[in-house]
Image (cartoon, rainbow, N blue to C red; front, side, top):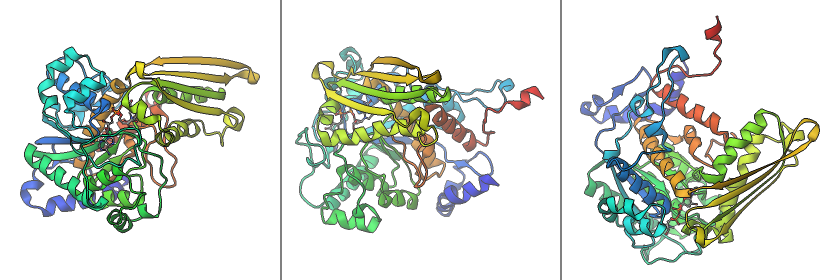
Length: 468
Ligand SMILES: NC(=O)c1ccc[n+]([C@@H]2O[C@H](COP(=O)([O-])OP(=O)(O)OC[C@H]3O[C@@H](n4cnc5c(N)ncnc54)[C@H](O)[C@@H]3O)[C@@H](O)[C@H]2O)c1
């Protein structure tokens, strides 16, 4: 019964389109159960990326390295994780990649835009995340990726300047130019499907405004060069108008506005965001649910970071930092629910700092000082010093998001994909809902969605059946 309702809201339009487009398409459907049908992952999958920087080149170089057997895709659920099916006694735990039909790494084709002309090889060399001995071995495919001219506005990212930008015309003309880029990329690479993932710099903080309300006001706004329309929104619009699912790895507002969410739904396209959950926030979403599970109080949580990559430089600007701060701060409130547990969390003092410190490059250091309290209010302290590598943590998330968004598209799912919250610091969610930040609930949601797609029982962890 529940499945049927889902079918009604997510799948019917997509299946109508598929069926009405000829019987040859009909037989490409892979029937899983009565309700969920997933088209096979045939042909090449184009991966379009605004922002050929540290994260995207570490991702692309990593995929090329894995394809050549030079390393393992560590950190990627689509490549390494299993999913338990049925009862614990059944011993059924296939790899996710064997359980759902995902695109093969060999079928990924990459392209993108950047304000700098550097090829992906040069950008990866500058980012200094991966060793040059590894980069040399994947030089050929990386060198072939030359960024297309970017849609860029200095007002939105203040501290970087590059020559490779589209000039002239309105924001609407630039959106049309991006659509032309997408079409040419698809044709030149003979791709069957495409996804877009924003790995560009963090834009200055903006709230949704009237121009973001409807598709008509958004298009009108682009034609009038409305300053409230950010470059990342023009990419998202171009993607959705081109039938391309869109993900946002940065904290920018981007497609989290009614105009673009309506467009995604109308075009039956899955979308997700915002801000990859790596580094300090990843640890926060591991630790905070643990304290809350044990009903331990938290008086203060002070987080500070030093990082020296280009992302760190961009975040040095207060406008871009404000965007990042918003997503980093919201996490604890949602996990701890102070309105339900005022004694434990009402007075929590939470601060986040990011300092640009060039000597560290991509090897960020994140300190957390956590003041917790226990039985009768007795205080304790926890210090976390995470010497992490930002892009090494982000690259597998990009891979999973690309493959899962493509899967969702082939499964006819549209609009916000809450099951991909697992990957984000500020998961997008339906109006009126609070976002789910607890990483373990997010993981359960993700795996249950995969089970649901394949007609397997959802796992509740109740477990009473073992003791009957
Ligand atoms: N590394 C992580 O762990 C992590 C985690 C969460 C979010 N992020 C976000 O991911 C994004 C990428 O991070 P990064 O470390 O690769 O940064 P980066 O500075 O190395 O790369 C970003 C690239 O985007 C380009 N760019 C900026 N505006 C553009 C535009 N309008 N069109 C096309 N290109 C544009 C820049 O020139 C730059 O080359 C940032 O927004 C960052 O905040 C990263």
